[in-house]
Image (tube, rainbow over all chains, first blue to last red; front, side, top):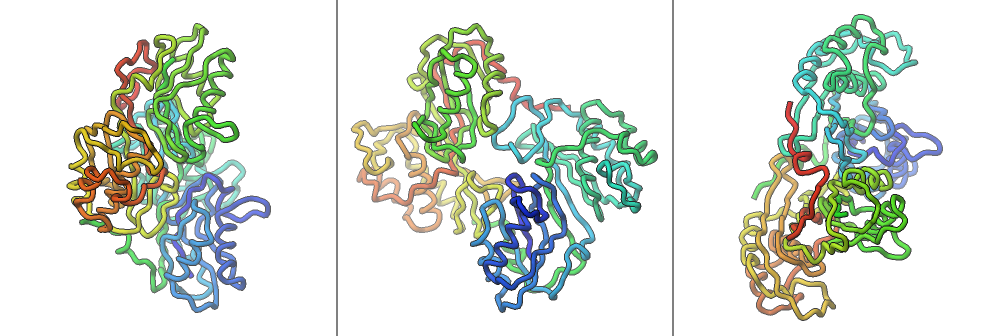
Length: 263
Length: 263
């Protein structure tokens, strides 16, 4: 079974299961086992950090029970807390490993510029007290588009050797209804641990004048994490979309259920 | 000191203080007393129910400390949980009772039409699984505009004699970015306990065909609560604005701080 899952990451110690902490995978495992005690553990695409949210995480598990996709979705929802929702379910090939089929991911980072905190954005967006120069951020982001060695854009201590990644799109956009809000969308093939939050942190430091406009291209050359700015905090980050090269069959509820309703 | 306060009502047992429950007034009292142990208790305009939110509740208290309005706001915020924020502070006449000076209130009710729950709207909007007829709701709401006897629109058991109220505006509006969302704004002089939630419940029952279009005018005539529909749940209700006939002086941070920032 392949699920599309949305969650508010605030109450969880991240996606990945841990022995003594409340995690998204742990909650999903519990719900799956409540329906089928012999089912496999769940296998997710992205190990989102503590506090990070998802609009469409992709998660697979195996069960021999003969339940249609819609039945799985409804049954699992009955065993999940209100912070986690199944948005779609599909029956697919047994043993399907969504992580290996992921070809593109989109993250959205939300922040708001205000010297006053907002109770309705607590845990859901990064509050930046400075006024940001949006056009400088959008302009600076352009150098990251394409295939580059992103060695500077990974967490300190990450010693992997393969650090070339491809970024398809970075968009810096404001919200017409709430001018405090700023969203940064980043789309790429694969991301290293904390890579999106380091990109966002550097862009915000450019936007408030703490980093020069040329800092990103310099970091791509030097490959040094220290040439960039802060790491943006987890609460503003949303895994928005995962594109798989094999989507399985029999989706429930199917795309049309999410289409606008009109009267 | 007169405060404008925003809060997420989800974790509280309502605005009004209670001996063994976490309330908004209780948290505000605690913060005020942490700054000035001799200050008065806080006096709010609206006793919002458990789970009901506020964007701009108005609250006053008395202190003899010589602290400027901005200093009060910053000091109180240090002692408040992230669900409560001070949006503005002003120094006013001692003993000011904001409840007596309230001349107009605006409530906004948020709901979303979906058969799937949304983790980011949990506790912040009412989920209605049916498709609603928005134009029937907007049309039906018109009969409530003006001065009427709203005896049918109060909680069962409420036996007050004076039930005439004035409604200035009811607006049923959709969200262009999220077509699931529907907002109902209600503006009036004074509201009885649960009156807004009963209005919204009746409009939703009209929108899903459970109540006839004429139900509201019939209820105004019969004065019978039973001629209306369900009471909408608290989680969708927001106290959006309170207009006072005397706003005091020396506001902090002043209206311009909430104006759009541009680059």
